[in-house]
Image (tube, rainbow, N blue to C red; front, side, top):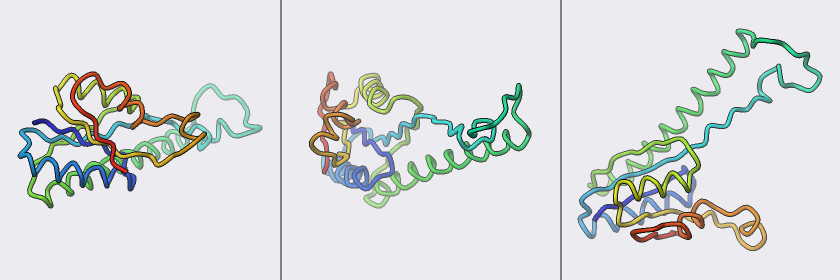
Length: 157
């Protein structure tokens, strides 16, 4: 059995990782992977060029570039921590898991990875949204459940 556990660093995903570790250990899974998918979002508002009332310039200043690099480094450290914390949950249970870190749309990338690598089970946390918010915003877990073509999906609350 191949298990793909999804994480975004939230409490819901932590619960999903714990459940995935329990399942993977119980069935002695052949392959366990933890996936974290991020969308690279640049906060241009943090750069002076994009402040209200800023004048148009052809290039960024050295300070702008340095600030942008610092933001990127902070995001990279956050992603590394999310993966490390997730793998630690499996290590604690004596389960060898590998990390998959990808950039892209989370639901699409999870589904593509699961199909391409032939995972039997995707374990994902719920966002806990209800009613109108869920209908309007949708969620990664809902999209994964609805669009999965093969294998099973377990959404953990």
